[in-house]
Image 1 (cartoon, rainbow, N blue to C red):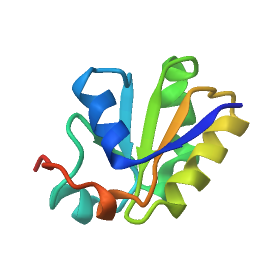
Image 2: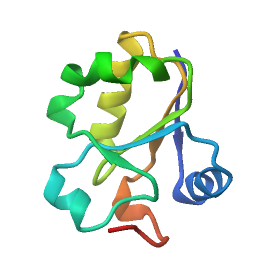
Image 3: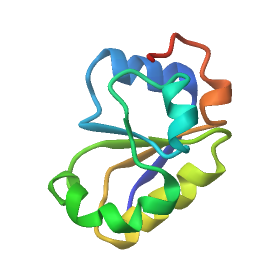
Image 4: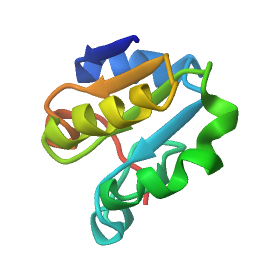
Length: 104
Protein backbone atom coordinates (compact mmCIF):
# COMPACT_ATOMS: atom_id res chain seq x y z
CA UNK A 1 0.00 0.00 0.00
CA UNK A 2 1.39 3.37 -1.01
CA UNK A 3 -0.36 6.59 -0.03
CA UNK A 4 1.68 9.72 -0.59
CA UNK A 5 0.62 13.01 0.99
CA UNK A 6 2.20 15.86 -0.94
CA UNK A 7 2.06 19.65 -0.71
CA UNK A 8 0.50 21.86 -3.37
CA UNK A 9 3.85 22.81 -4.93
CA UNK A 10 4.76 19.17 -5.58
CA UNK A 11 1.23 18.34 -6.75
CA UNK A 12 1.27 21.31 -9.18
CA UNK A 13 4.58 20.13 -10.61
CA UNK A 14 3.25 16.59 -11.06
CA UNK A 15 0.07 17.90 -12.74
CA UNK A 16 2.15 20.09 -15.06
CA UNK A 17 4.24 17.04 -16.00
CA UNK A 18 1.16 14.85 -16.58
CA UNK A 19 2.31 12.40 -13.91
CA UNK A 20 -1.19 11.52 -12.69
CA UNK A 21 -3.33 9.05 -14.60
CA UNK A 22 -6.44 10.23 -12.77
CA UNK A 23 -7.31 13.19 -10.52
CA UNK A 24 -10.41 12.91 -8.35
CA UNK A 25 -12.07 15.77 -6.51
CA UNK A 26 -14.06 14.12 -3.72
CA UNK A 27 -15.93 17.25 -2.66
CA UNK A 28 -19.62 17.70 -3.39
CA UNK A 29 -20.46 18.77 -6.94
CA UNK A 30 -21.25 22.39 -6.05
CA UNK A 31 -17.71 22.89 -4.72
CA UNK A 32 -16.22 21.10 -7.74
CA UNK A 33 -18.12 23.39 -10.12
CA UNK A 34 -16.82 26.47 -8.29
CA UNK A 35 -13.22 25.50 -9.07
CA UNK A 36 -11.17 22.32 -9.25
CA UNK A 37 -7.70 21.11 -10.14
CA UNK A 38 -6.91 20.80 -13.86
CA UNK A 39 -8.22 17.57 -15.43
CA UNK A 40 -10.00 16.52 -12.24
CA UNK A 41 -13.19 14.49 -12.30
CA UNK A 42 -15.75 14.69 -9.51
CA UNK A 43 -16.57 11.64 -7.42
CA UNK A 44 -17.93 12.79 -4.06
CA UNK A 45 -16.61 10.96 -1.00
CA UNK A 46 -19.95 9.27 -0.36
CA UNK A 47 -19.79 7.68 -3.85
CA UNK A 48 -16.22 6.30 -3.73
CA UNK A 49 -17.29 2.79 -2.68
CA UNK A 50 -19.85 2.69 -5.48
CA UNK A 51 -17.22 3.65 -8.09
CA UNK A 52 -14.63 0.92 -7.33
CA UNK A 53 -15.57 -1.02 -10.49
CA UNK A 54 -15.56 2.19 -12.57
CA UNK A 55 -12.03 2.92 -11.29
CA UNK A 56 -10.70 -0.64 -11.67
CA UNK A 57 -8.55 0.18 -14.72
CA UNK A 58 -6.54 2.57 -12.53
CA UNK A 59 -5.51 0.05 -9.82
CA UNK A 60 -1.84 0.22 -10.83
CA UNK A 61 -1.84 3.83 -12.00
CA UNK A 62 -1.20 7.10 -10.17
CA UNK A 63 -4.37 8.57 -8.70
CA UNK A 64 -4.54 11.92 -6.93
CA UNK A 65 -7.46 12.48 -4.57
CA UNK A 66 -8.21 15.78 -2.89
CA UNK A 67 -10.90 17.42 -0.82
CA UNK A 68 -11.43 20.74 0.93
CA UNK A 69 -8.90 20.49 3.76
CA UNK A 70 -7.11 17.17 3.26
CA UNK A 71 -8.76 14.84 5.77
CA UNK A 72 -11.41 13.23 3.56
CA UNK A 73 -8.96 12.57 0.73
CA UNK A 74 -6.78 10.53 3.09
CA UNK A 75 -9.86 8.50 4.05
CA UNK A 76 -10.75 8.02 0.37
CA UNK A 77 -7.18 6.84 -0.31
CA UNK A 78 -7.57 4.24 2.43
CA UNK A 79 -10.83 3.00 0.89
CA UNK A 80 -9.16 2.59 -2.51
CA UNK A 81 -6.08 1.02 -0.94
CA UNK A 82 -8.21 -1.62 0.78
CA UNK A 83 -9.68 -2.37 -2.65
CA UNK A 84 -6.30 -3.01 -4.27
CA UNK A 85 -5.26 0.41 -5.55
CA UNK A 86 -1.59 1.03 -4.86
CA UNK A 87 -0.39 4.39 -6.21
CA UNK A 88 -2.46 6.90 -4.31
CA UNK A 89 -1.73 10.55 -3.66
CA UNK A 90 -3.46 13.06 -1.41
CA UNK A 91 -3.14 16.84 -1.49
CA UNK A 92 -1.90 17.98 1.91
CA UNK A 93 -4.22 20.65 3.29
CA UNK A 94 -6.73 20.07 0.50
CA UNK A 95 -7.73 22.59 -2.10
CA UNK A 96 -7.69 25.41 0.47
CA UNK A 97 -3.88 25.15 0.47
CA UNK A 98 -3.58 24.90 -3.33
CA UNK A 99 -2.18 28.28 -4.38
CA UNK A 100 -2.49 27.85 -8.12
CA UNK A 101 -5.13 28.45 -10.78
CA UNK A 102 -8.24 26.29 -10.74
CA UNK A 103 -10.46 25.21 -13.62
CA UNK A 104 -14.21 25.79 -13.77
